[in-house]
Length: 159
View 1 (cartoon, one colour):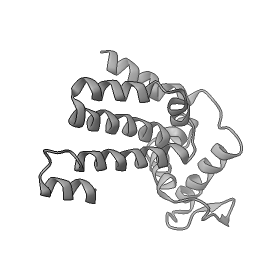
View 2: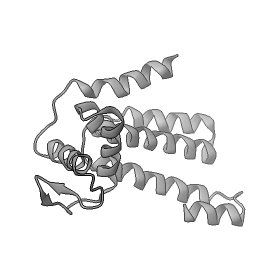
View 3: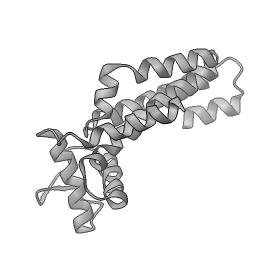
């Protein structure tokens, strides 16, 4: 029950604030133009080619727009999901490497870190990069566990 309440707070809080300029507005407009034009390959900002950042977040936000319509909440959904992914990855890897208590503690520490929480509730690229870098470090840790088989090591390293 506590987890459901926490998830509700995690996802609900970002719809009430307007997008912060210039970053959030820019990173919300590029996927809006993708959806409007139907061109998901060439990112554009105000009609001008915009290759300044990788497209993964734009695609994630555009999918949120397709599913839920363009809004402050759907613009921030990518950050919310990658923030949650980062906490789950740290918790899961910590539990596999050091035990369940350590994994839960690691996820709670990350989930209560102010910068992680604030970054998760903003439409910027920083949290997605941080989450995927953290995920890659977690897979590296799992590959280096002493009881990992050669096949498991290879699998974790390739992931």
